[in-house]
Length: 542
Image (cartoon, rainbow, N blue to C red; front, side):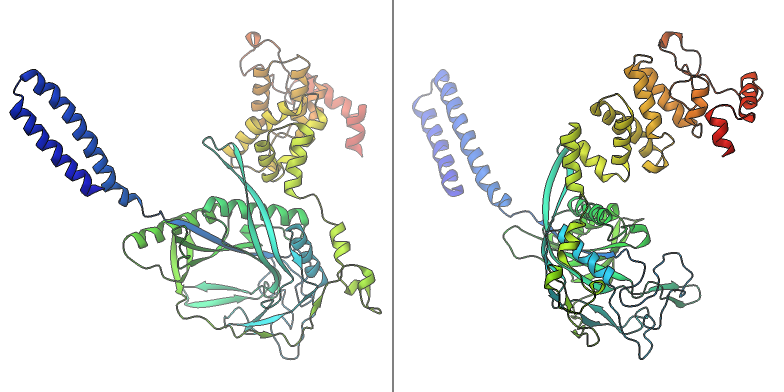
């Protein structure tokens, strides 16, 4: 096309010369020149489009992300020993002979850990294998005294699941985008101890308290493309595990650790060489690490380089991933069957269990399925159907720890409608919580106090602007009880008196401070309480 366009341009230019020779009239030349000029501009535009089209033909690189989540099972004892599980215990104080790998010790499987893995698999729509096997994975770290880890490589306890997750998208980030990721498998395995490197003394300290703690490794297929999707999937998994009670999910304490496998490729081409970013301890850092690694690999490939198959760590201060070790030499873990553990059997019902086996030694799918609680996705749907709130609001209520309970407590205590309550919770409450970096449980204003403010507004005793001023004032002066406010007739509690008309507000926004100890009203109240009059005095004496 480019050649034909160039030939057409030359032909038109020759035509222009011939016209100028045979028709020297100025008017005609001007008219003809305008026509020829328009045609030449059109042809040159086509020619430029033909030249730029091959440049846009190469497909853009896109990220491919898979995750491995290590969830510490919420159990009183370890996976194969009777040692207690504790996060802040003194170093090496929760170590049994088996945890220290002393000769002659044998593993005894913890039934609670098996039930936790089965319940997690059912919640994620996995197929529960009725028979699973344990294997030894050999590698030599100082915090792994046995020289191997007991895991499930060949036949894990659960396979082929699905995790459905959501995140806020759209131009204003107020649209709920729902996606899913495949769960390849869930396997039971031991955790390792901790190695504390002391560079000053040039030594490494070992703490085996964590060695042998039960883990669920959840392997996700590479169905995600960016850090935001991965962080949303991990957050949804965290909520599910917390709802089930199978893992507390505190990432700061290492109860939930994430490894990200990241690569880039052009759609339709084989996947690129992947790197593994290890032990990411928060959803925010997970998104940052993945997005940085995708951009880094794109830059390497576009510069003509080659991405190395390596393990990297994430530096939260710089926002960069740092190489730890390369994986070019494939590590041979020498997997072998665990000789000291028989196959793990899971039964569909009690009737299918072998005779003579104690019920405490059997894991029954039917019983575990009956104990499944309400999952986060069901909670969101229930909030929308019950209260008529928007899906994005239900998403925020469920994802913020404790926010849904706060919202429902306010709805139970107030005459205001759920939509009005959600506006206050999402705007006033959550705005101040985020501004001061507080959790819902740390809110200075209880659900009952907010409900009282809304009741006053619904009854027409205070206006909307005054209600917001009351909310702000209560936030600044926490610790005043509802009874103290009721004794003064203050309405919403916390010792404040409301004014309906904003024009008659005194200084301080119309909030009369609670009287101090030198005030006569204080002395009168104290005298009444000393004699035990009223419910307040009885309660204090009790």
